[in-house]
Amino acid sequence: MDIFSSQSLSLLNKSLDGLWKRQEIISDNVANYETPGYKRKYVSFEENLKAAVESGSATKSQSNQKIMDADIKVGQTNDETMRTDGNNVDIEEETIEMARTTLNYLYSQRMLDDYFSRLRCAISEGSK
Image (cartoon, rainbow, N blue to C red; front, side, top):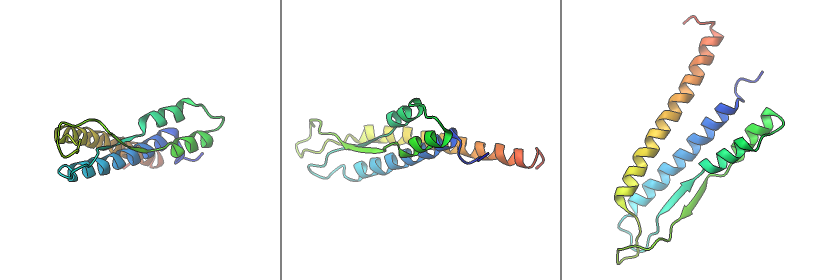
C-alpha cells in the first residue's frame, strides 16, 4: 500500500498548486493596476480537476496521474473598461478574489496537515 498516492492527497496537492498560481496572477493584476493597456489575467483549474476525478480510471495510479496532469490555465480578459487608459483591472474585485483564494489555500493546507497527522497517529498506533 502506497500511503502517498491517495486520490485525496493528489487533489490537495494539485489544488494547492492552482491556488498558488492564482495568488501570483492576482498579485500581478494588482501590481499592474495603473499600467495603461494592461488586461486582467485569471486562473482556472477547478473544472479540469473535477473532470479528472469524474473521468474514472481503471487504477489508482492512472487516476492520480490524470489529477496531476490537469491543466492550470492562465487566461486574459478583454472586457471593456470604463477607464480611458484601457486597463480593465478592478482593484476591489482583485482584493476580494485574493482574500477568497487565501482562505481556500489555508483550508487546503489545513486538510493536508490533518491528512499527515492522521498518518502519524496511525503509524505511532495512537501514542504521541
